[in-house]
Image (cartoon, rainbow, N blue to C red; front, side, top):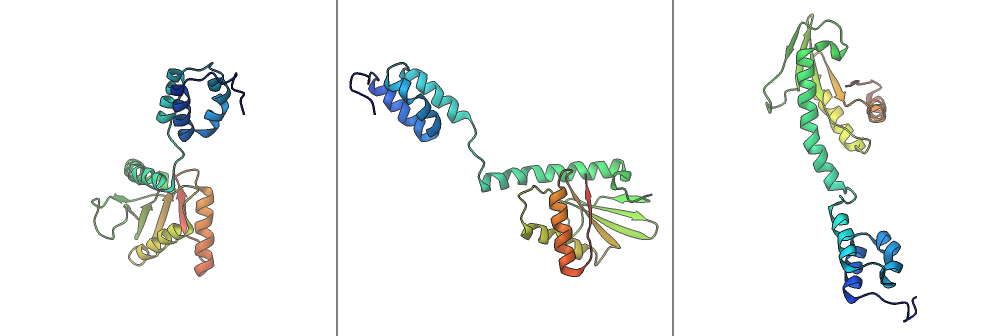
Length: 185
């Protein structure tokens, strides 16, 4: 690859380059010629490696799930607070009462609203474009469970989740020819 006369790198530079290559091979390949020619020192390469180590790596499946686990409750709390303050965001017409069950109470929806003689369960779920059909199916099963006790149930997804909402609608229609009530907030 390089002639002996052109190879002017110190052993420390080559060692630092090998460490950088383990973190970011394309970057290491890009600077390799300068390193071997002696134009980059070990401290300069170590500084690049240090910067590269601070750069977050590609998010894996489990890291993404943990991030969703952290964001989900926050989204849920925000929507519950929003509905409590302004039930009109649900676009269901006049709401008589908003009931927020205590957090963690078994089998209760996130919010219950009353409208005339109807009780409506509101279930808030965080979804991403990567949310699986299996997870969406579980959400739809939860809605079916709530509809055994309440007049009907509404599933709330984050705004921008149109594709996931469409997938939920298609799954439900394929199951029982009925479209679920989904709201994007």
